[in-house]
Image (cartoon, rainbow, N blue to C red; front, side):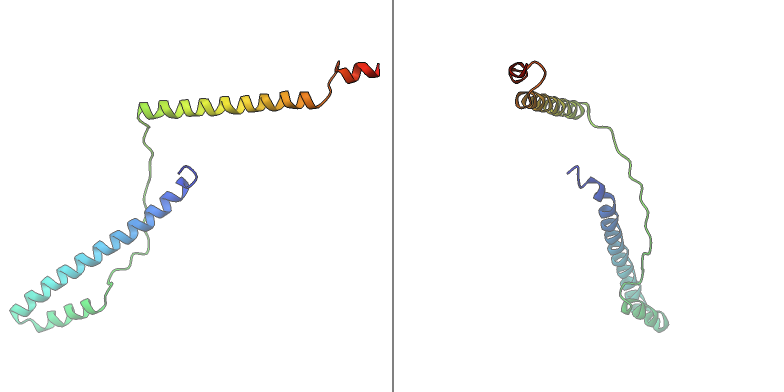
Length: 121
């Protein structure tokens, strides 16, 4: 909604951070497992122990900062026309309500030349 639009950039940033972190973790894990399999086939015990300790650490990469830039796009012409029409109708409704309120206030409040004024004179 329009009222929650300001909350979108931080929410998108959190989601992007989480998704990217998951992607990096899964790719590191996949490549580590591939290298581990390779070291098992070659009998490389030193590499195997380092790769096993890397797998044991779990999340090996910690993202501490992320930055994004958001830019808006112009509305399509038909959407802009609908929005302009909606704004025009809303402004007309406000003006009509304001005018109606003034008419009601004049009916309730005696003004110059009203019957009450004439009775006093």
